[in-house]
Length: 425
Picture 1 (cartoon, rainbow, N blue to C red):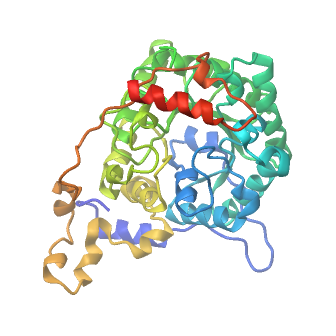
Picture 2: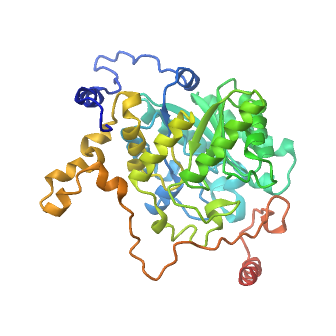
Picture 3: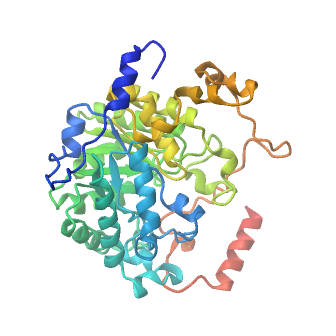
C-alpha cells in the first residue's frame, strides 16, 4: 500500500479473497461478466505472457510459437494459469495464440495433422476454465493474426479460419472473446466481426505503436474501426514496452473521443524495454527472441506502468510476452488501494521491499524502503554492450514475397536468400 494510506487499509487488503465452492457442493455466486465489471469502473487485471514463459520452460518451440502444449503438456499450461491467478489476474486467456488451422500447418508444423486445431483449442479452453473456477476469474477465448491474411487470402478465407476457433469457444462457453496481436486493422476488424457473431463481448488489441498499423492507419482510426466492427474493448498488446504502449492507447482514446465513439480501454504490453524499436516493435530487434533478457522490466517499472495506465483511464490492465506472474502481482499491488485487496501471492512479498528487514545482511536490510527502489537505476552488468540496438527494419508486410506463407518447411535455398538479405541490410 502506498505511503499515506491508513494501516487498516492494509489489513483490509490482506483478508479479502475470492470465495471458493464449499465442501457441501454449493455453487459459487454467479461471476460478473467482463462488461459488467468494466461498466462499474472495476479494474480488470489480465494475465501475462504464455508463449515466452513456456518456451523458456521447454514446452513451446520458438519460431512457430504454437500452443500444442495445451495437449502435450497440460500440467505446464495449468500451472502457469494458476500462478497468474494467484498473482491477481481476473482473466484466464485460453492458450490459443497462433492456434488457427493455417498456423498449425505453416512451414512444416506437425500440429494440424497430428493433433488438429480443434483438439488444441478445446484443451486450452478446458484448462483455462478449470483454473478460472478456482477464483473470481473469467475465461477469454483468443484469436490472433493469421498466415492466410499475410498470404493475401480473401476476406472470406480469413474469416473462415477465425470461425473454426469461434466454434470451439462457443462450444466451451467462454465468458468473452479477445482478438489480439494484429498488425493490420483490416484483419483485426474481420476477426471482430466474426467473434461478434457469437453474441459474447469482444475485446480487440493490436500490436502497434504510435505510428499505427503496418499500412499507416493511425491508432485513433484503428480504435474507431474496431469499435464500429463490434468491439466493446480496444487497445494494444505485445511488440512494445509499457511506455510506448501507453502512448499508443492515449492516441486511441483521443481518436475515440474525436469520433464520439465509446469503448473500454485495454493494454497488455511486453516486459522488455523498447525505446529503440521501430514500427514493428521488438521483433525487429537483433536480440529477438533469444537475447532479450537485459531488457526485462522490473517489478517497480510495472507498478509505475499500472499507475499510469489507471490515470489514463484504462481499466483492463495486463501484460504480454515477458510478463511473468511477479509482474502481474506488481499490477495488483500498485492498484490494491483502488481494488481494496491484495492477491494471494502478496503473502510472500513485502510491499516495496519491506520483507528485506528480515535479511541477515545490514546493507540489504537498509534497502527495505520504497524510496530506495524508486530511485534505483539498475545496471545491466554488461560493460561492453550498447544500451540501444539498431532494428532490422526490413519493412516487409502483407503482399511481400518473404511473407507469403507455405505448408512446406522452409527450404535451405529460402534460408540462404534471407541470410544474404540480412548481410545487405
